[in-house]
Image (tube, rainbow, N blue to C red; front, side, top):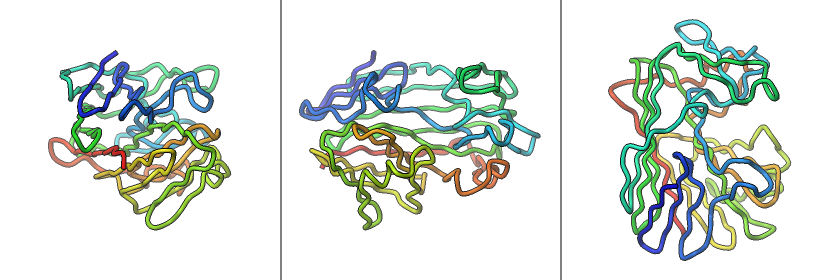
Length: 258
């Protein structure tokens, strides 16, 4: 377990996963073991969304990639590169066409091995400041590699009727629950405020959109995404790709208590 601690804030990181964020002793992150989700955060890369209806295949320039829901990045282990009181840096590295065991197989998937025909490196940096917690994602790899990126943090809820503010729109928890597993789209948005017992702002750079998901009343996932996958049929998921240009692309998520 890695701990960052400064400015009356405390961050707990387990093998790269954000498992706790407290400000003045108040916990904002969904805790493992609580109803709703077995994790507390993860990344969606190089694709977002389900692929089962497309035979777990996603069309790319080098043929069909074999990907399960939300991509293979989550099946790789983070390496910790550095750690201080206020900052921790992690990396995952993938070599093109290397088969990766799918943890969902065979109970929840028929795809035993996942494959992506491009090289990439993925970094995740946590940094505490007086303003709050900033998480930066760095994507590098083969020139023109197609990719989508989503971040999937789960926030702990403390009251029965929290609301979410996005683009001057108010979204109630019941609306998110009603959508269910597809997740509620919040397009063309870079900032969301969760109004719970204490308010928390999630501000992003590079993503452009959000989706909201929960199936229980004690947590909600506020997910910055580069593409909303349910806008297209699974066979056409390639329509949501961006293409890697230059040495590295960066995406940021700032979590600030208001």
